[in-house]
Length: 322
Image 1 (cartoon, rainbow, N blue to C red):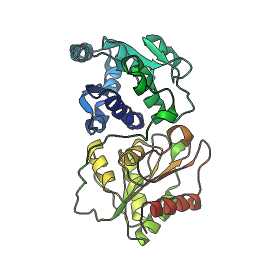
Image 2: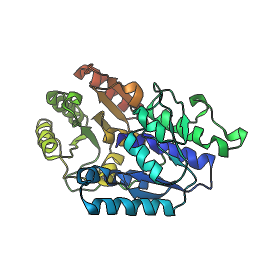
Image 3: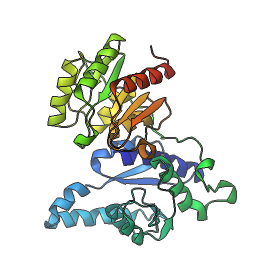
Image 4: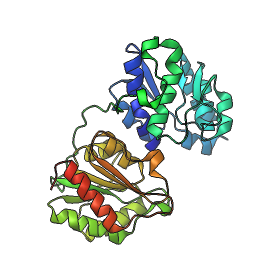
């Protein structure tokens, strides 16, 4: 999900540089709601690769894959941009039947994927993921742009525009306003922050008049969310789709989350966000959005409670909250 969010400003740049462009997006169906929210995306195509790769021995899987290829080729694209830089994404980009632009072998996550591109562009791997996607798109469009419109460096890029349209706020009888969303779950245990810290943070937010809302996405995560909520008089919503979670985040006064996709969605929606990084360097994928934000920690550098609390207070103040 984070990769999808980081690529959203790329679509805004494509529209700005080529006002008449029609932009389609190929994405896992679970995350399709995000590009559909982008004002400049014309069509979203679901690619259930996680499901298909487990069933490659089945004939109906290959029929479904072939049907998707037919749909993509019927669109007659002029250019395909692989912003993910993986072998699986490069392989599917080639299936579209149009020129494919991607990172060169020194700039990409999986170097062998660069062999499948017809255009290879060098983009410093030390840049933030949002900037990398935007520079890749600008480089891929250079042959089609006037000299005045060409972009050669991150310095020339305007502020990122995530392009998300007005999102309807989530409604539930148990949800009080104002509220703060806590996102304590992540894909790996190494990313976790102590549950006692989450409870203490929720207590502080509750004391300031913000209802803590603890987000979850699986059975195990739900149990953790309920334990945290019980310790701070918070609320645990029912299971939410990506679109519903985006609606919940859009109405939040404050969001505190681990290095997960929903924290990046909140930032893209312009919400005040504090990101807690326990197993990844935030310089490459730190919180980036149009609202106030902060990224704490790093690989093997779990931030302490006081450090996170200070960041929450600073971001809340910048957002005009108590």
